[in-house]
Amino acid sequence: QFVRPSLGAWALYGLGTENENLPGFITINPPANATRTYGSAFLPAIYQGTKVGGRNLPGPAAQFAQRFGGGEAQTSVADIKNPRFNEAAQRTQVDLIQSLNRSRKTLDGGVSAEVEGVIASYELAFRMQAEVPGVLDLEKESTAVKNLYGIGETATDRFGRQCLMARKCVEAGVRFVEISHGNWDHHFNLKTALENNCGQIDQPIAGLLQDLKQRDLLKDTLVVWGGEFGRTPHAQSNDGRDHNNKGFTLWMAGGGVKGGITHGSTDELGYEAVLDKMHIHDWHATVLHLLGLDHEKLTFRYAGRDFRLTDVYGTVAREILA
Image 1 (tube, helix red, strand yellow):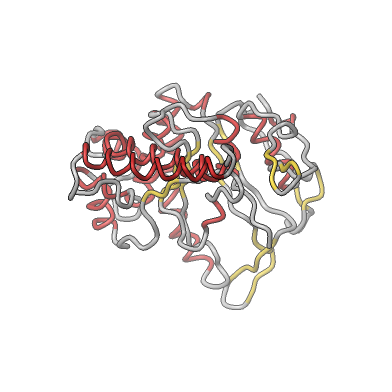
Image 2: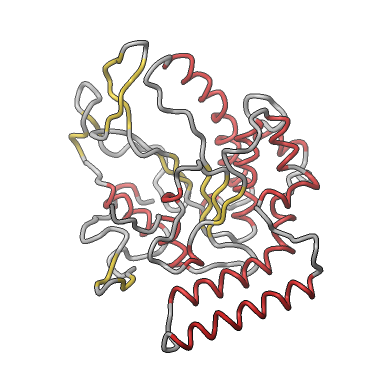
């Protein structure tokens, strides 16, 4: 299957970055098998998401906190520093690599999006060493803020830290931040599993929205909550639900979205969308519009044709715009 750039990669490609010392696209705790959700595919490498943490981290909240909190914050981006070299030595090393990269670019005729992406990525990695640890250090946050996100509580600590990191990244000028929470594939044991998951996420996500609003960031920050498909209204054996791509829900807040409304509806069984259907291309077009981008003009030429996030489709859902 032809792999295309992720939404975050397209957004960064269109908007550029606000902080040259930080990645414009950060993905926090991404699933190990979900590289497509933050990959850049044929876009230059500088537009792919930078991973913070990962699913291979220790499970218990206390161990997670130890890895992401306080003085250990810098370890949350793999190999952010090389303790065997000081800054001057690393600069010399990077300069040597960059000279080789520029030689490669010259051999390619002076124009190479791939090589330019690599060059930009190396420079960003060097600059990140000084800024990333401070952005991801949660220990300087007040007790009140940590409590708002449920940090310190067993059920909410792990996801609460992700949400607080997301706010700090947005505050520091990161354009696109992606956080994730897994184990929603409830083919069995739905009641218990759903209650557990909701108990882990409800307070942190509410805390994030409240924190953004208190800091006057919510009006300029689009928050999206969703997954890749829904669940069937009918049960499977062992109290579960199967996959359903015919009708499902996501919500958005802030960033120019009209609050307190629902858009679209399913049939009486909750199985299939029947009113104000929104294809993924329509949703992508709407998100890009809210970010200030025209989905029909945001293109990248690859393999002899212009590509878009929305392919050749997509209609902005103006009914949900504030």
